[in-house]
Image (tube, rainbow, N blue to C red; front, side):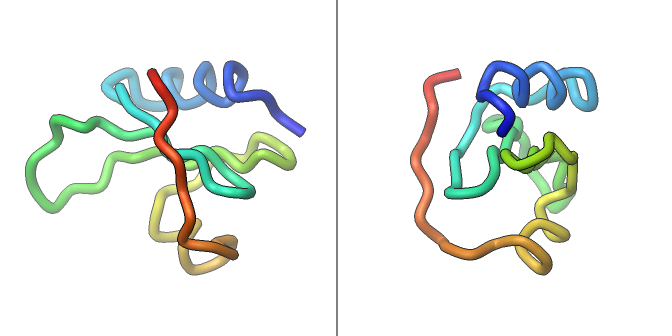
Length: 73
């Protein structure tokens, strides 16, 4: 199981613009809360193994709940 801090480090290495996070039951979704437009630059890190995904792949393949909580970044 990967910690929030480890997941944040991975996300920032992949996209240094992320500045906010939602926690799901099995993943962390890091994103730029100031992003405007259709481009999705969020980075989803799976809690189980630290695998990085884009948000669409997470929703299609791993999402088990739509419940989330915002984490203070």
